[in-house]
Image (cartoon, rainbow, N blue to C red; front, side, top):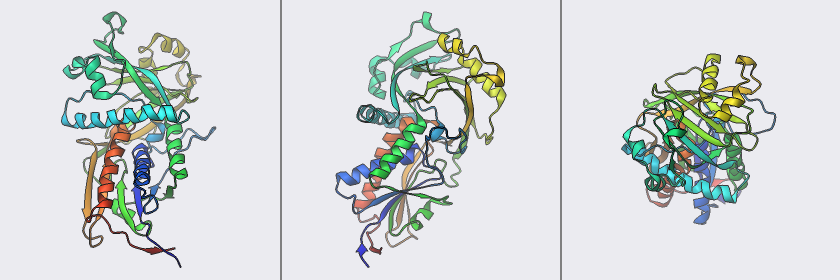
Length: 382
């Protein structure tokens, strides 16, 4: 029997979502850059994995929000410590997406114009100007829209250059790349983050990218309902924040993915089934976003609309106070204390924060692997 010293660095999660996938690839890249890819293997453990198989059913697991997300990069002013932290991750993600779109044109990223309409803009939004916007977000092309160009009821509008992602194509592409680079997967429903240390011999570090954590009292679902349509002529993403707290948006899914019309944000709502009344409200609100879109939607006739492919419900994994991103050690699991790196609770911002979060997670993982406090490399037999 041959004895090898190859522990796993395991990513664990209930869903192979965007945070887990980007963390997996980032760790792989770092290990390869330091010539450690033969000492540490990376595994994703998940109940569900992404697919973009043509003709596949449009149904999905309601808690597997990543694969059906609208997925556009939409910045928020860094007006609080939490939002400032997220702004750093967003800017890092933007830089990664720029390079990825050039290197991997097949991956599902499309540069587009983003438009924001605000009915009651707060001071932070009003303070944004071209130079400060780009410095904070990494996104170019900021331009405040003239009052004459704003829809009725909108007090502030601006546009900028951003990205839309076809979520199923993108997630599937990331998983494919992970596997081709030597990663492995295990389909399993884990009940606890510490269970990750039992799924393979000599697990060195676990990353808890489970979305809502495992029993974290600060976590809760935010129900979102969107409408997937077969419209293909729309080429920009528009978001409107209404004074009553509701949102209206349109997100084109390039790569033959149709167009998303949304959407609701319903904290602590566990409902899994779509509501037809909500579909009607979303489509009616979308008509006020753009004249061309309104013309395309004029044929909508209740549940007989030729434009609607599916009503999609997802429960976004949200956490009070923002993402948990930290190391936790359990001294009962070995002489050095096994370490879990927590990375969950991004809510609806998973895509736009993903690569920034992955970069920070990778730094924490490498610290664990390179210090005496990290799990030791122990031999196991094949």
